[in-house]
Length: 221
Image (cartoon, rainbow, N blue to C red):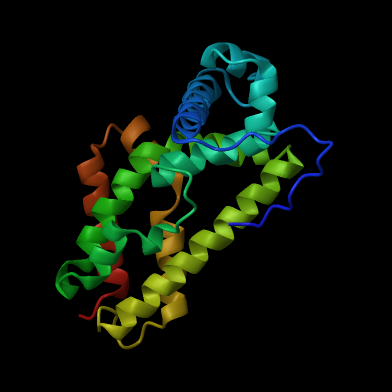
C-alpha cells in the first residue's frame, strides 16, 4: 500500500476507509460495470454515453467519473471483469484453474485448455469484439487493446514454456511457435462468435475443435 503523508492541520479531516464504506463502493462499481456491459452490448460503444450508464446504474454522473475517468477506461474494466471475474488484476495464467491445467495430466492438457478457453470466450467474446471494433476509431481504446494483446501473448508464452517443460509439445515445435498457434487459434473471438452464433455450434463443439486443432498442430505424435 502506498504511504500517505499526514495532512496539514488546516485541511479537513480525512475520510477513513471502513469495511461498510468499502463494501458500498464495491457494490457501486459492480453496478456501474454491469450497467455499462448491458448498454454497450445493446446500443454499441459510440452510442452509449457515460450519462446513460449512470442512469442505468442509478448513480450520479459525478460518481461515474470518480469511479471511471473515461468511457474507454470503463470498457476496459468491463472486459477485465468478464474475463477474470474481478478487478484484482491477477493474470489468468496465475489463477488456480489455469495453474491446475498446467499441473494436470499431460495427455489432457489441450482438452482441458480448450474447455477453460471456451468458458472464457462464452463470457467475453461479444464484449471483446465490441472493444476491438471501437478501438479502430478511439486512440485510448487502441492503447488498452494493444496492452491486452501483449499481456495475452505473454501469458501464452509462459504456458508454452510449461508445456514444453512437461513434454506436451512435439520435439519440432518451439515454445514461440506453440504460443503463436494458440494465440491465433484460441483467442480469436471472431471464430467463436461465427461458429456459435452464425453456424449454431454449441460451446462444447467449439471446445472440441480447439482441442483437436491444438493437439494435431502441437502435441507429440
